[in-house]
Length: 225
Ligand SMILES: C[S@@+](CC[C@H](N)C(=O)[O-])C[C@H]1O[C@@H](n2cnc3c(N)ncnc32)[C@H](O)[C@@H]1O
Image (tube, rainbow, N blue to C red; front, top):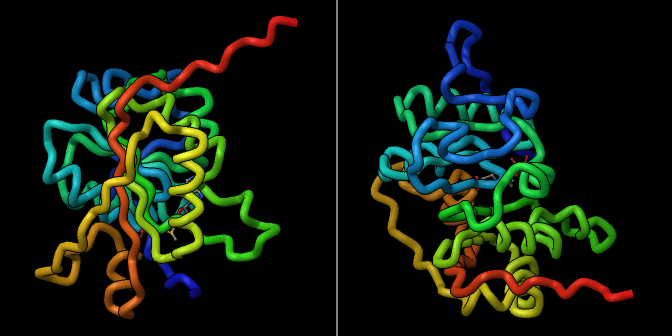
């Protein structure tokens, strides 16, 4: 489904506190380097318009939140939402999440990783572009502390099933999938994300799961020859 036009924040709105380009990031991403404190850090991959980032950071002031969004216009729109919400524990990053997990996030440093309604990439030949894939699952697992959470919601059954199978196969340390329930909305923005709202309003089934990492990621033995 085509996405709606998105409004950029007005040029006079100061996003300094809630928005970073990749080039502005420190070598390592942590609560200390991004927020100057040691609160647990959660990361959302593909924040879109930033509804989750704004509501969740307001609801959990004792956690920090980083949202990573590859489309610049959406990243700045989401940052505008954080600014409007007045939260000080959330920052939007404009860029690709994959290299950040590869290079900038220390092992066992995250409290949670959130992926909501990632682009489905329906065609088989495009499946490798999916945000949840072998590499990212391994990266998420490495980045999460033991006890940390991975939330994955989608309205694409095939994506959901493949992710469950993939995790069982390559990341058993994640443990069993824990279903997450739909919460009935009490107002127009009372959804986890805009895509959840769209799916529910159009009566499209949503598949929601959470994992809680139960042990350290097994280390791959080094080849001896
Ligand atoms: C279908 S939208 C869902 C947005 C939001 N999570 C929601 O549920 O409303 C998926 C989002 O992921 C973003 N995205 C895709 N690949 C990404 C990547 N590698 N890094 C960061 N964001 C990505 C897209 O630009 C898009 O905004």
